[in-house]
Image 1 (cartoon, one colour):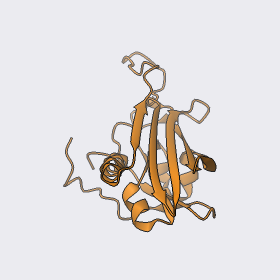
Image 2 (cartoon, rainbow, N blue to C red):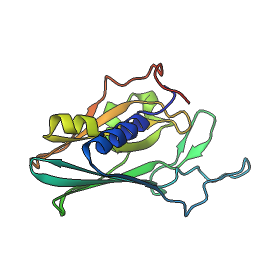
Image 3 (cartoon, one colour):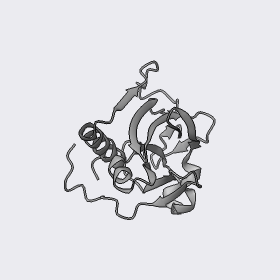
Image 4 (tube, rainbow, N blue to C red):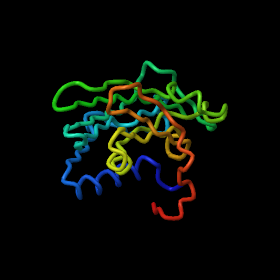
Amino acid sequence: MKRIYIAICIAAATVALASCGGKTEQQAETNADTTQTATDNTPYADPAQTMKNEFQAGGHQYEITIHREADKQLPIVSDDLGKKFYDNRVDVTITRDGQDFFKRSYTKEAFESFLTEADKHGTVLLGMAFDSEKTQKDKRIIYLGAQVGQVGIEEGPAFSVEIPLDGSASSIVRDTAQDNTGGDMTD
């Protein structure tokens, strides 16, 4: 897979929200310099990123904010070549009609029960994104796509985080229909 599942979700969300009159906003924080030299032993940290999406369902206006950031308090991850990485934390905040509806932080640990032993080592939580297409189709659940994988390779198991609009407990489901052939994607 040449691009990560998350890129697909972001593109789908952008297209779907643009056609539905929704609003999508993505911001990458540029305060930190992420350039590292070959002699720098500091673990690599993904740049912080914030995405905001809006949609309507059941007569309510929802706003979803997804913020990914390297968390230096989590264990450092090393790949097969010994390169070190900070793992990411993803904070999801959802409001309904301007009022708090859902708030949770996710780390790779939330997905570990679905990971093989090989997937647990050398991988980070790459990120999460709003799945506008599934959410608009269902209208009872907010779907977020998530992916765990190796930094730089950006492949790995994908998941669907399902947040029911009735306020019941959220769940994580392994995405077994993940496209990993790369046949319809380019660099």
